[in-house]
Length: 316
Ligand SMILES: Nc1nc2c(ncn2[C@@H]2O[C@H](COP(=O)(O)OP(=O)(O)OP(=O)(O)O)[C@@H](O)[C@H]2O)c(=O)[nH]1
Ligand SMILES: [Mg+2]
Image (cartoon, rainbow, N blue to C red):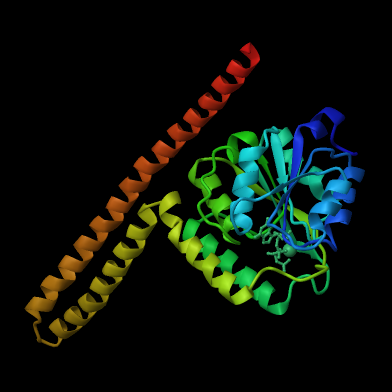
């Protein structure tokens, strides 16, 4: 394989969550094998078709998840594997194993902890339904304005993560919010995330995703997790709202004052809204400052803990 040594390939585990994917799981595993990956882990959601049988016959390790949902499956898989790097990929045949090297390279070179395959550069006709494409664009836009981070495909199912990261993400969401949560956990804990372009093919077999229900769930997850990344952002918003309101009332007060009409109470309200609003923004700013410092320290502690663990292992 171009760009990856055999020793590097051995450091990678491919994790595939599946639920009734008998149509695609076999070819998905075959493709990764062709690229040289031997460590393949299928976490199955109790499929009622031949998914597990096929995966096992292809030599993958297969486990049945203890709970329900893709999110729970991913969290459980992270606790069961121990490789330096994991690649997370859907078992529906939509991603190409040839792109795996693109995901792993930035990690091997040491400039990312989390690499996401961006599907929007090169997708097959029909791979996204119109609704899914629109929903994806809206959710990514919503993510960018909420977090101020330039990512364009936060819901991609194809990504690579370092051990430091996947052993330390806190995954509470059970379903299709898992990609959002993985992304937010990465930036909240101070790890580096980047995107690389990947191919995206049309799905064979039935989707498990409900675009409306899951779309809204993902949207509310993006909003609800803002506090994990930056608690101050809520306050920026509130403060800005107060200042804008204050300015609006203020303009009215000044306008009338030129016409010799005085609104004393409204003038007081204007001053209060603007001053309080500015204070709320400053509180948000200070809150963020403290939070970011903590997040740096947390990251350092995580690294230290991992290094200690490795040391202990070596001693044994
Ligand atoms: N273990 C497990 N896997 C699941 C579960 N739900 C979905 N999956 C798998 O997660 C992967 C992604 O699910 P998809 O239905 O393809 O969802 P999607 O990729 O967001 O949507 P599409 O664009 O329709 O493909 C697939 O490999 C599914 O089989 C679940 O509850 N448990
Ligand atoms: Mg899919």
